[in-house]
Amino acid sequence: MTTDTEEKMVVLVNGIPASGKSTLTRALAEQFGFPVLTLDSLKEPFMASFAPVDRLRNRQLGCAAYQAIWQVVAQAPTRCIYVIDAWFGFQPKEVLQQGLQQAGVTRVLELWLAITPDEAVARYQARLTDRMPGHPGAEYLPELRKLAETAKPMALGPVLQLNARNPDQAAACAWLQRQLRLPISAQPALSASG
Image (cartoon, rainbow, N blue to C red; front, side, top):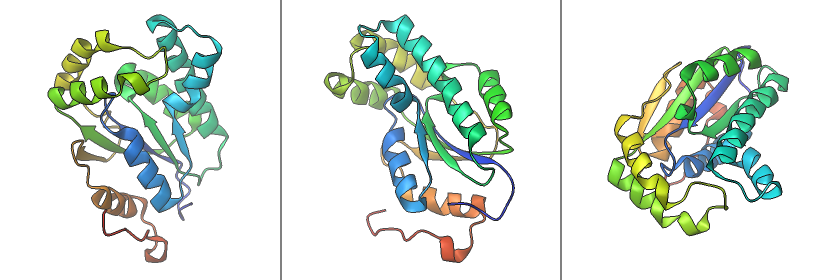
């Protein structure tokens, strides 16, 4: 889907690990028809190819995938809006700013999934057996708890904060509708379940 503006925009779905980014990203993509880029979808094929992957290699692959995201966005038409699912705080804010600049992005919208430390730890722990080898394991839980206490949105443009426990997908879609200034005819039909 495109807009009538010539601004190059991206929608960042941001939050710490286990905050529900992937679920929200899928909902937005379905509602608006936006293409999606996720850090894990770019990183995990390399994790599988270079197994076993330790924490250092995981981070290196994450940094490489992050750069690949901005190269893909740079090659897209100006009016193409990507939804990008990542924990953007894993690198300094300046790295994000450089990536956006290199990609020619002129407007950033951000959906921030706020999560409590207890909820983050419980969610991450529950999915440990479902994660591809190479992602941090149970040893990461104390670090994740501290991260949940201090993490903040990137705030390089308008931000909508959602409660990760029960994110209001209908509100997120309505907010994006307004921010993107889409014509009423392009407004997505929201399901009753939101």
